[in-house]
Image 1: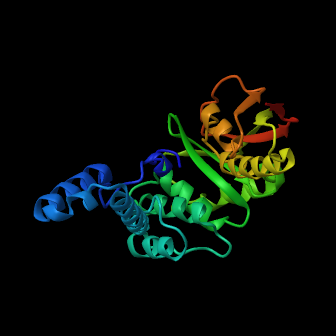
Image 2: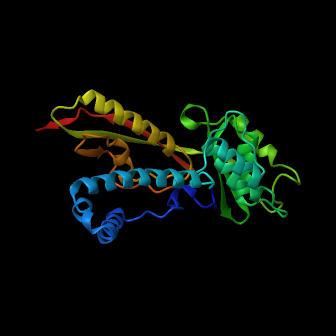
Image 3: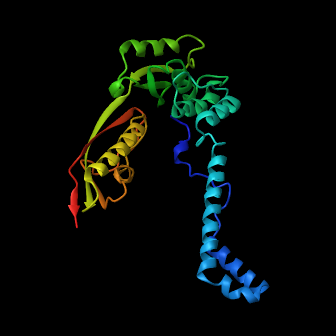
Length: 283
């Protein structure tokens, strides 16, 4: 969302602190050895230490689950029904038919601006467009170009992200009249600029694992990354691209065709076109 905080960049908070299990076990062994000196040899033995490590691992998994449960109370991380409750309770926004979590989260974040008393902030344009044209628009950005000019960029749900001229006119008419937009705004409704980013991926793998299985797993991860990338104002970063292509047993990942990061631009959606090259086998 233009002008909004990118919630995806926030680090996950830890509601429950992560203990230093090595230090805690050392303190436990020292305490028990002092309290029960006759058992000192047992407490300081490998078997007892393994028991402690096993129990610590169970507690660590529970702590992580508690942290995940707590994050479900935050707009940035809530999903499913938890997100619906947050959106309805704090933002007065209900999920639209067929709407995914990403779209609902974006509308909930923009909703407070839609209730501005004077004029329409950027978030209000985003909220009203995404709410009223949800079946046809995958993403929308409102861009202030200065001098009262507001540019509304639309990424369609049709293959390739295109939008029809008829849809552009309907969106423009939606903001016509006294209640439609700020009286000082000169609104333009335009399609998103879709830029193809062709890239070839070559994996280096050890001899042994089935190359087809590895490539299939890498392909699924890259498809998910490409889908998340194909939105307005989202940049492509080489580390994220190679991380999406990396699967277990892969030694290295080479991205051919993209030499530098592509910064985000509010009017542009990047469409990643991936070709998986035969892997290089070593060993």
